[in-house]
Length: 113
Length: 115
Image 1 (cartoon, rainbow over the protein chains, first blue to last red):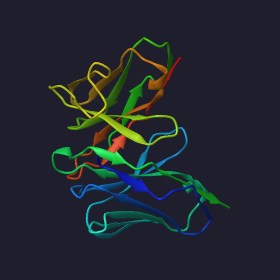
Image 2 (spheres, rainbow over the protein chains, first blue to last red; image 1 turned 60 degrees about the horizontal axis):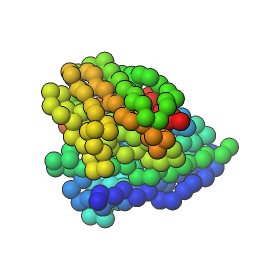
Image 3 (spheres, chains in turn red, orange; image 1 turned 180 degrees about the horizontal axis):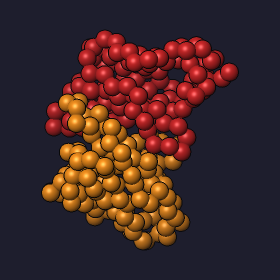
Image 4 (spheres, each protein chain N blue to C red; image 1 turned 120 degrees about the vertical axis):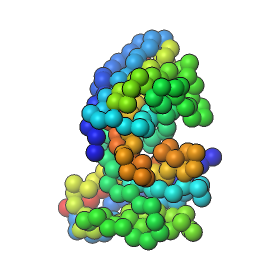
């Protein structure tokens, strides 16, 4: 059973702070990892993808991947109230399961002014 | 990324009936998927919609309950058959991008309530 676990929430940070979201996965065959943002009542929106060990930065977002530790994280710098949402970590199945995503349970982030 | 639409956006259905959900993409895509998001839960993959062949279902999902069609590279349908209140969920289709790592983009979803 492939599993993706996210750090328990909800997470509350003040505006301007760094929000840190963490995720671990069980399937060593997974090669691709994704972070989605989901606003209440909306569908998930892809915000970051990462495939190689290390950091990947895109604006205020930084994704980190450590395949040896089976760990993925998302940092949001200068958090804004508009970042308040549920963040979903997903791992691709890899191999014959390429394209099949397993999602974590999500972390609710609240950024308060 | 592709523009994805779903119909209907929401519906309220009686138990024992069936509902067909449509997913339309504005460009040809190789991979399309159907997910379910139960109330307060994360997403669970139902099946991969294969063009020209039967869908590939994940553990716990069967064709009789969730028949899927994929007549071409821009369109797919998911039917929820013989519905019960436990089928009340949001159903989402997704498409994989044309890049090598299959980034997936989701449609707006169909919110289904079964009474």
